[in-house]
Length: 248
Ligand code: SF4
Ligand code: FES
Image 1: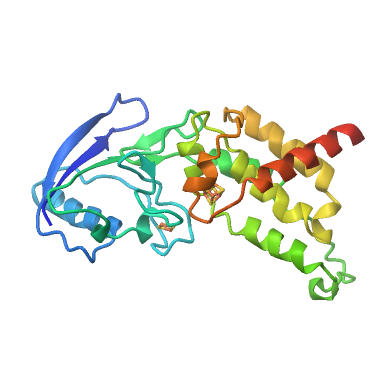
Image 2: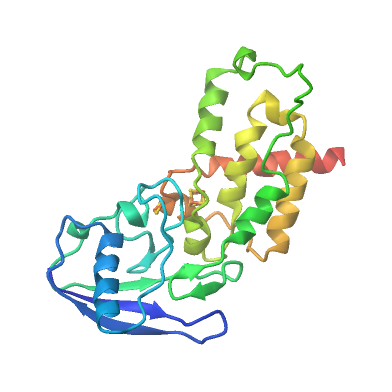
């Protein structure tokens, strides 16, 4: 396949940045999207040019780092996969492919296609955990009975990989699907109930402080989420927030 790539290049956070064109030939349809970028970078390095900076780690859909906006969609044209799981057979010979970073005020561009997603880390640090009593009397978690429906929903929420596609695709740059998943994961389990009030209040406060927008129920986040996190988690977070606010 011969392709024209239009890629966002930006030297650093203060650089204005612009789209640049690259012609790439002999691309195998069996390559992953990131392998195709590796080939481009190899060519750029051999020509003495600066390679394109992009985030990646696991390359198997579990770390959430490969945050690429491809042809106007988070993680590209396929659904329920990350950019590293996308293959070049999803494109046609002669295609022009637009590759951009996530665009959101709370995710500033660091370089080229890499954005700073530490806002998500700070939200997690505000409450996305449970405190465990390690005094020697800790109860075996497997000995705590949990309704199957709750266990399944908590597990589904826990599959969120923190990729940020929900934010990038939302017209308001809302992080409510991510925060909803992180709140729900614990709200549904007995272990999470102890700190439930502080958790939801603190995580939502941090989310607002980071500059994410509000949810207006468009649902684009659910469509583009590679893990199929349901909007139901946003509703659950809102219920938890209301309960916590009334207690407080
Ligand atoms: S909710 Fe989905 S899109 Fe948002 S961070 Fe989690 S996995 Fe990514
Ligand atoms: S590189 Fe880990 S999810 Fe894509």
